[in-house]
Length: 259
Image (cartoon, rainbow, N blue to C red):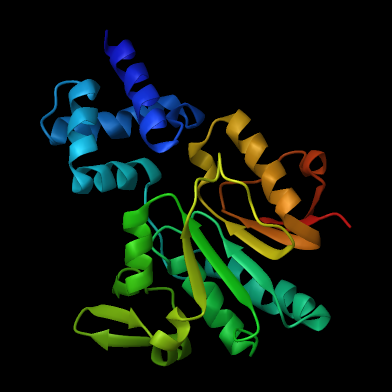
């Protein structure tokens, strides 16, 4: 009965939102959502769904738990340094009008990190930076651009002074930077992708998906890149057999679309 309850919940969520929870690793997804359901006082997933369908705040909390919105600026700083010192200058030599996408951007730390680096390289005004996520609550926080001191611990001091305004224990992104990013709601698994990207960043998201969903996404990302474009993934997301997606390793956690 418990399994049937969860399976029916998966179906109802898909019908209601187009989000297919079956594409996520079941054990960890079920564990996270069960914790939330019990915390909110619902004995079954059926009752939890009915409440979620009527309560927008509860629905956003469900999305938050489902997508694990944990992000920081400059997460794994040495990888961002490789992007800043190696790949972006290489791209800029070909064109200043870079087309970049932060996929599953969560609360915005990742696209803002990219935007700061592009600004330092003097190409942000010419670039196109798209940031997408399935969670409207997370996108709302990203557009607001206000963060706790925990999020900014890896931000270089020069960037902190230039692109943030400190107010007590919070840090606000400057309006100048916010204006340069276009935020959009998107379901990676079901929506079509734009094409001809120079750079796609999708980090620490794939670990939640099934192998079949990963296979689908890597192919979609590859198709969305221009020949020679770069896919930047998370530190737990090495792509095995990248050649099957027309990708080749370019550096640790960076893959290049074959020309």
